[in-house]
Image (cartoon, rainbow, N blue to C red; front, side, top):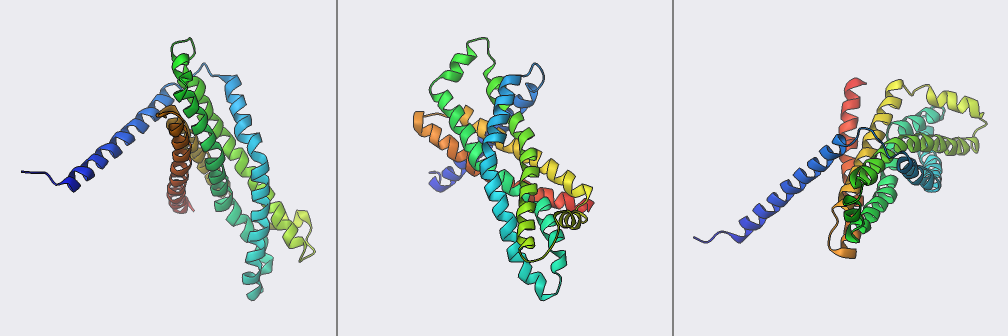
Length: 260
């Protein structure tokens, strides 16, 4: 009896999917097994510089524009109800609870995730990682652990920086329409922000940073097929990271709402 070709294709895709899930889980488990000391401090600091400082120009421009545009778009709706005085609080809630963590993670997924995937992918296909494996250097600890730690540490810093710049952009837009002092604006804005908002955003960005780092490293570390594999690793790192970030954002919102 002949088997149905369509059934065979579906079965093969399921096998490939679960094989990939197993490989990713094994990769994550290997990361946590090698997380302990000794640490590659110089490489961790270098990666923090690459993730943090190199991302500041893009983060600064994006956050400033977000602050201005969101405030400008929100003003007419509040003005219809005579509630423009709520604008600083509305902007602060939107930025700290959602916009700053999510936009920072998406920018990092596009910029940092692709860079990690391409860098490790090129090292894999040019056999640099293989050369490290036969030397005294632990390539996984040096290349993967340092990068994942850097993304996990720097994304919360970038998120709070982005929130501040976005609030500055919002203040400038409000200042152009109303005579509001900088101090009064921030007092009004932050009075509705609770410790839960800061804490949840901090935890979210740590998780986002870990996901972006581990996905980029996984794709690059396991790249194959020469230069095409490098491009595929960089592309998959970006697409997969963004998808995972959105899923984690949905889960984080649900968990946060249980405590709110």
